Structure formats: C-alpha cells, structure tokens
Length: 470
Image (cartoon, rainbow, N blue to C red; front, side):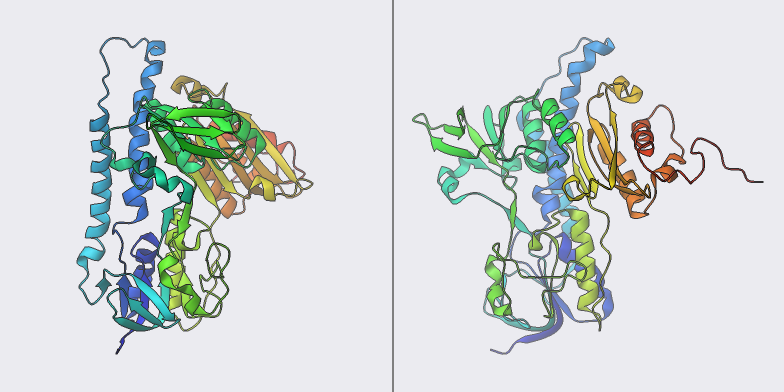
C-alpha cells in the first residue's frame, strides 16, 4: 500500500499534542494530527475543569456552616444534586467546546485524521482504516486513562472514575474513595460536602501527594474531621447479597453504594505497537526518553504529556508539547531547562508542593522555616485559620529550595514561591519584598523570618531596613 508522506505526524489531539502543533504548524513543514479518541483534552473533559466546578459548588455550600458565627441567619439554602451535576457538565461542555472550536474543528481532513495509529517502524504509521503515513518525525501525545484493577472491573458501573463521575445524574448516598492522591482527595472532600457519606482509603500512610511529614500529619488531621480516612492498608472489594459493595482495608470495612477508584492514570500506549521502535520498554510499557528534549532514545520520535507518565499536569504537558514540537521541526535537537516543579491540590485547605521535594533534600545542608495558620489574622477573619507552611533553603547560601504547605490560598503562595525558586532568590531577598497587611502572604513572611534565623548567609545587609538611594 502506498503511504502518504508528511514531515511530522502528531498522535494525540490533547493538550500536549495541540501545544506541539503550535510549534509545528508555523514551521512550514507538512503535518498531520491523528486522534481516534474523544476530542477536547483530558483537562477540559474529565480533569481540571469539571473537577474545579464541583469543588467550587461544594466549597460554597460548605461555607454555610460558618454563617452563624458571622451573625448571618434566616433563609433555607437548598441543594439540588441533579442541578449541581448539570451545572458541572455545562461548565465542562463550555471548556470542551472552546478547545475544539479553536483546534480540530478548524482543520480539514488532510490535516486532522480521526483514527488510531500504530507504528510499523519509527517512520511509518498505520491507521485504523489501513492507510499508512510515512513521516520524518513523530510526536506521541496520546494522554492517559484512569487505572481500574482487573479484579474490580467485574463490579461494572458501581466503580466510578473521573471518566464517568461527572456523567452521574445523581450522586450515591455512600461512596468509598480508594486512592487519596490529588484527585481522590479533591473529589472525596467535595462529595462529602455535598452530603455523600464518604470513606477515604489509601494504602500509603500519607494523602494528597504530601512528602513533608509535618504537612502530611496536618492535612490528615484537618481532612479527617470531615470524613473517615483509612491509611496504610490496601483496599479489597466484594459484592454484598443486597447488591452493595463491601470495601475492606485491613481490619476495617464499610458497605457503600459506589466506589470512586482514584489510583492514578496509565499512559495510553497500548495501541501504538511501540515494539516496532526497537527500544526496550520499561515495566509500564514506556520507552526511554530525554525529559529535556522529549526524544525517545536516538529515534526521530518524541513523547510528551501524560503519555510519558511523569509530570501529568497541564502546564507540564504544554511545555513538553512545545519542546517536542520545536525539536521535531528543527535540524538539531535542543535541550531545554525544565521549569520549577509546582503541584497544587485544590482541596480545602490547598495542598501544594514547590521545587525540591522533602525526600530529595540533603538535611545536613537544609534549613526549614515554618508557620502555623491558627493565629494568622486574614485566615482567622476568613474562618480558614488551619494548616501549615514549611519552606526549605540551603543553610549556607540562603537560596530557596522548595516548600510544602496545607493552607488557605496555597495556590497563590505556591506560585509566588515557584517563581522565586526559579529565579534562584535567597531568603533575604524575599524578605526585602513588600508584604501588605492584612493578607495571607504575611504567613509566608513569618515562615521566611523563621527560616532566615537558621541560615548562615547574613551578609546581605539588614533585611528590615530601607535601601538608600543617595
């Protein structure tokens, strides 16, 4: 069969693929975008956006519990779960339509091919309908899929994932959330606040992807007051005679209507026939690649986004797509410095990790600054004075290294710290910046003062004094 010839083939029209296309399309190279699945990106369809819509509704409803403290009374706040879920889907559809309208919907059939593809060799692809495409470069951006253990698949629709949670017309009376990473914790708290009887289970002894033991302890204490959390034992599921599900973890068990499986996501690589690339795949079926170039081994093939299973976040997928796209249309391969790691969990309080992780730091050379949020003025007024912020710096130089936190407005503090870490700022330099009053950022200022007292680099001048301009 005669193959169609193009310069670049992108497999996957999600975030990474579309960002890759933003570099390929203006290059003047010929290209095709191939995707046989649902269009609209994981973020818009089943990830970031519908989850944040549900979180917002749940958080707004939860605020009613503090109204009496403010002297607010009267009026009945009613909750209509079908209307809530309809709102979530409406928001989801708005974001999906926006993505599609600005991408694949504008493409002609010569450029966008709604088919699955597989490798016959590193430069030859076969489509689901038998057509072939010979290409100089290939970018794999096929995304990922929620993990459901084989043994659990027999429970059918009673096992929910983010792939079908937002399609529910109503919510169950009770649910076990198995896997308390970012999504499991966000959805578990939101469902609990919407009146679902939630039990959270994780075989790890921490939740929310937290690494720092003090932050981990704090977040378990805070979230554990909203619904029971079982840690340190793997979950098992059996069917009861009445049709419900019994979920057991060690000596504990609970009978629930549904289970939300939040065990992570696996890269969508099964259909690609990656064996044809002639490289050794790891235990997950992922090929070896360079995270600064996105190139697979020495091949004219690149992999970006969730497909490589490493930094499964939209902003990282965007960066990886751009790197892959740039290198796919360039005569030479360029290595790019990756941005400072930034992870945000949108539960309440926000759980965030920035820069170097606790477990990777050299504690002979690292100092810690800490602040607890109980006495923070702005947090007290908001009724959100719970949590902790821990900031790490090099003892000798004072350079900021990383931070973990479980605190109000953590999503904002995390960004500030990520920018400062990427600029290689010292604790003293941060403390010379303005801090308004009263704001949550004053808590960061307090943590930095605590940290400043533990580092050796005091040769930058008094941090509390103004700089002379004369």
